[in-house]
Image 1 (cartoon, protein in one colour):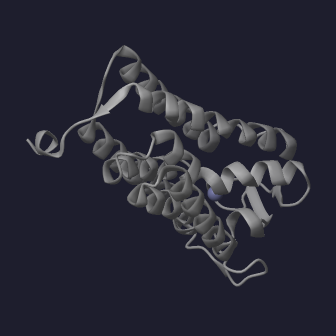
Image 2 (tube, rainbow, N blue to C red):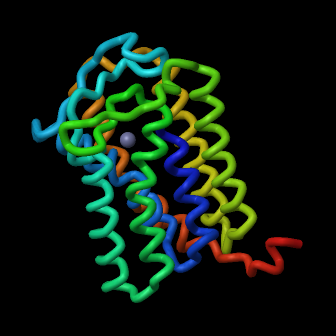
Length: 222
Ligand SMILES: [Zn+2]
């Protein structure tokens, strides 16, 4: 899953206004932010295998530390604890931690059963990637829902608050469409380098956050 993780990040801002959108993106994307550098370092592995599922040509053979359920639960605890010690915001710390492990559950919808629970299995995955309509529906619903909640609960302080947000939405949408409809990447290394580029979304989230204000709950309901 790609867009859906960001949808959860957007929704997190509604639940814990103290949590920056950039921190929320760091949490929900942590598994992928870790995965590509670990692949470059030769610690985790995937390979190009066109037809692995209908939607993605990538075969994920080995990613116990970035995408294992137990590993992500450990990362969750660590993230939550660090956030709490740094900021003393209990709700934001809990959501920051939960955001990390949420990645496993969203990915488990779309991946075929290659998502490790423990580092060496058992493996889970519902395989929505075998179906184009289900993949597109799942990504659109989770991303669209989260963005809708975010738009209802924040407003731009200035023009940057509008354009930085919509620039991100367009960029994410174009990246996702390119990844599923575009020509397959030339090789594993190209995918890894593009994947490391996903770190860009963390400062982008912090940038948006600084230019948008929370709408008081009563106003948001009206
Ligand atoms: Zn992932």
